[in-house]
Image 1 (tube, rainbow, N blue to C red):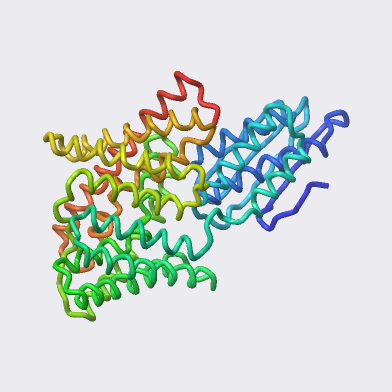
Image 2 (image 1 turned 45 degrees about the horizontal axis):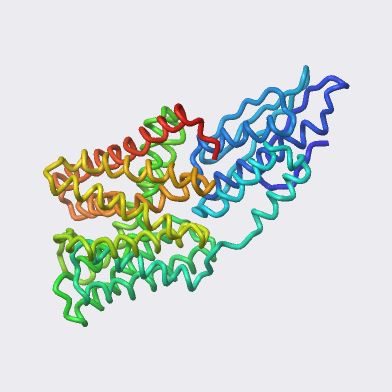
Length: 424
């Protein structure tokens, strides 16, 4: 009998000769798909998922491996001799926990080295799946306040704007976490949390006498903006994975639209008409400290293990420095974004080899200071306010900048795969 240990199991088919050990082949297939499911549920790219399933399947005894991954499903066929097993597995949830990705890839390497058989691999995967996130609710709430307030500083906000942002972002994050616990739609939860955060940011900014309430409002919702999802969608499309790219792009658009609706509601009720724009960035030494705090905060939100946080912070500062330096010497916005993406990609690949960790552990938090998630949100806000011309212009610019960032990362990844045969 085929195993049916998860609700995600939909269909299994086995055609085998008597001498092909069908039960073992079925177990290997189930184990490999369990690894793929964990990766997809916690933010891995479809290319990474397919590569891991292939490696794990061959390491555990499958001779022929065919796999196709989408953000919502896995399809795989394993074969030995004349027999084969096929399985379809549905992916019912998604999130971002980079510690889970690192754990699964470490298990895959152990299996490839012959240290784990199929049963031991499955036990290790179940332990990884049940392991708690590196940081609990209160630490991630503080991390949300840290990354958003530092972002407010990067956008030119003063002390009052930073304080208002920190408090509003923390409450907004708690609201999103509470709504997630009652199984409310992620899109709807993002819209409600955005309304809570921006409303508080506006009230606190006015109470503190902040010069730029818009900066606090803009920054307090950045922990909700799906910047990584936007870049991942562009990367998938660049790679030719149309289904994954379009699926992630659709989810990103829905999330951004919900966030914009929440902010627009606050502006409508308050009667304040403002367009959220970034002010001049701070001086370099201050900017480096703020980029450090922004990256650390987002890395904690993404579940990066504690021992990897310093390396993530370094990647974020390098990305910010490369992008800003290129802009200050007169490079176009797209070129500056491309160079920033290349910088963080090269450093992430180097750190991955030095520390024996997946490059995404460092590249995903590292690009946060560059992702045009705020501009994507502003695009939807302009459309909601009826400014079609302004919204269209921002939409085109957002797509171009996200594409340039994804291209910078993609070039480095492609070169690393060809020249160095990446194994992590």
